[in-house]
Amino acid sequence: MEAYVLEYLNFAIRWLHMIAGIAWIGASLYFVWLDSSLLPPKDQPSRDIGIGGEVWALHGGGFYRAQKFSVAPPELPTPLHWFKWEAYTTWLSGFALLILIYYVQADIYLIDKSVMNLTPVAAIAVGLGVLAMTWIIYDLMCRSPLGDNEPMLAGVMFVLLAALAYGLTHMFSGRGAFIHFGAVIGTIMVANVFFVIMPGQRAMVAAKVAGEVVDPIHGARGKQRSVHNTYFTLPVVFVMVSNHYAGFTNHKHAWAILMAISLAGALIRLYSVLSHRGVKRHMLWMSGYGILIALFIALFPKPVEQKSGAGVKFPDVKRVIEAKCAVCHAAQPNFQGFNAPPKNVMLETADQIRLLAQQINQQTVVAKAMPPGNLTQLTDDERALIGAWFSQGAKTN
Image (cartoon, rainbow, N blue to C red):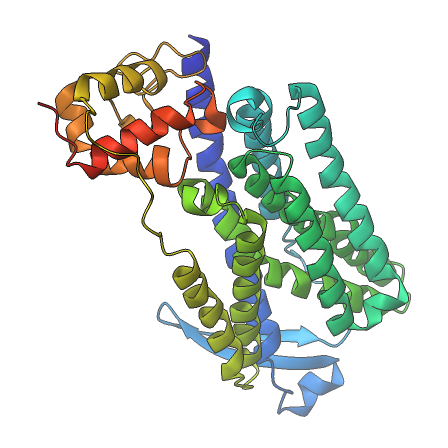
């Protein structure tokens, strides 16, 4: 019953997280494009009321004219639409998933005792501490003189995030490390909205209501954090799907892979932002995709040295799989915390094992991703046995 409730909550919250994330990222990408596409207004009346830029667009059979004031309009319009709940809902649902999957089930998904022998309480404390401390450090840097030098700020942030990635991958399971890296970026993004962008916008509105001159610093700070958020977008989206790729999360240099893909995403996004302004820096997207291609080549699997297959019998392999794999991958799993076989993969019969032989070898021998956190203590000799069986043809008779 408990496993069923956890699984259903996982589904419901993940769906909400996905919907809210699409709404937030979609709005962010649109407004970055809009801000980068603005042109000075051609008519004098628009300039007279303080419009600094405008853009015409055609969508869905209609013409649109979007205008942006250099600071604020002469009078506040009604209604005035705010964009905040997309960000808040994305973070709240993501944090709920972090708790539900990685904290409630820390022994399964967060802790890998072969990496660091942490207790659930210690692992959770580290995870929460990292979320808070990274935001504080980032915010202080943005408010310091370093925040006035964007290239330097970006370089320092990259170094600090690389150190974070290294630390996380040497404390948590691969999946736990990657998801916490993404949670750090997501927390920075939503904290930018909550602590900087929204307060600035409220101050601008309050000044207009009071008949005071609006301080342009609020717009400048909000735009800076908004631009930072757009460069974080592709890395955080990658992390959201990274747990499907054990070749990344379980690699001995997982932290470097994480940073390489994050850098590639940021470079590709930078090219996109600049191209909105008519600036074509093709070396940016070429560098981004070049990193991904280089990563593909570097991670290309090398032949795994298998122990001699002579004498390996399928009944011996099946006993290992039954004891170490089928406790979860069964029609009715008997391992605590699993209500159904993960990804609907079942390894109870010879036919099921034969059909999935390649995946079994890839996950248990090559990537060593299964069992997660090596929960069932699959030994190196048992992995070698499975690898030898696979190398001799994965025969079941």
